[in-house]
Image (cartoon, rainbow, N blue to C red; front, side, top):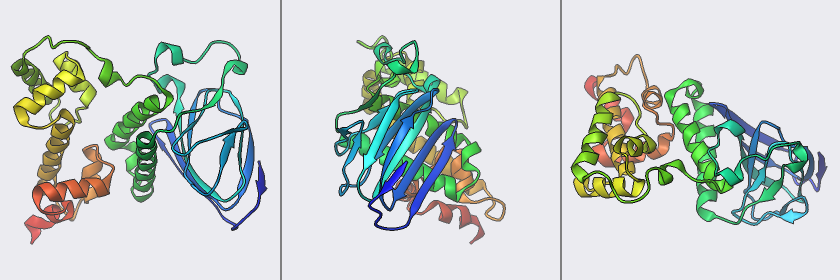
Length: 292
């Protein structure tokens, strides 16, 4: 690595390992040239963050809201001229659920490629927010990386990484076509899943699998029955689970973060906003309520 045009003598990198997935965020006070070969056991997804600095990989500019993707063992040269920020995610190859034509090619590393994607503002915002929230939670709560919340966070990162790399998202591809079950049966199967996993996190993919319909059909059934999408229903359901847990907890023996992590929540700020909108108070106020 070669540094160039330093504007400030600073080099800050935050990192966290979440169920085998490594996320990083960097703030560099200079431009640099980084040459090398990526790890052979996974994929690196890199997102430039600074509008005032041009990024290029192997001589190809990385456009704003576009990603650099390093396939396993690929050679690269990443260059910047000025101070800049970035974030990245490394995902083990076995964790990614890709379309057959995106699977890692067989043979030696010379067949692996370094490439850039087309700009995608939505995915770039999601990626940046996910990395930021995970790093914030990991640095503020040591229990995060071993909690259920980290497992859920890792699953969401894999799904996001699959979308960035151009692969399919499993929840969208399961059981395509017309519904095989009427709305009442879909809801019944969903409630049965909730009963079987009482006190546990239930994902959208698990709902789709239990109902044996497409995500679109599941969404229609939930909107007709509850007036909510499945994602929003799961969100509200978990907020009620957290609410009950906070009311039962002793504030002298636990804190809000512990309860949230046990219930699969790691985006504390966003959760608190949704929670207050629903219950009219912050999670911390619920926890302390019975001791007032």
